[in-house]
Image (cartoon, rainbow, N blue to C red; front, side, top):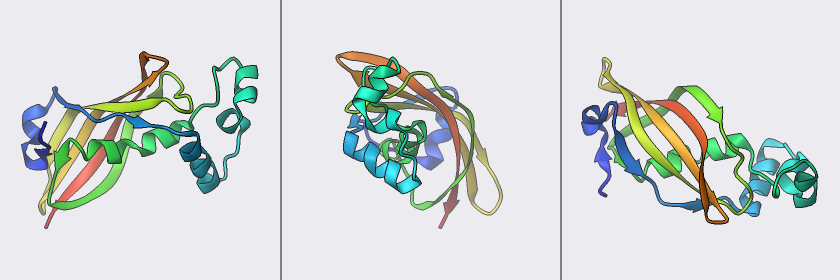
Length: 151
């Protein structure tokens, strides 16, 4: 699927615009994220510790998974404008993403609103799916809000 121009996203309100590629959430990525935010909770870094807490292995930080949304979303849309994070609504972590799992997102448009001065506010409906051991599960739902600013 070709990326959709941000101006055309208004046609997709209430609809899916598609799925991103799969991206593996490696133990190395989790460790780098832990170092970046200084959160070294063993549940994210130590398989044996995570297993002692009823998990199959170490899990990604929830906000690490959320932080991958822009990378995966930009595969589905195209724009020649600036983009700003504006906020978000309804963030729910449905299932943990285990180290080594692959994730992908499905994006839909919840709201598309033209503001003044060439700014468009877009609220996405995001579902992030995790696949591990041949099982795909809904891991995260979120409605990130972005401002697109024309040149």
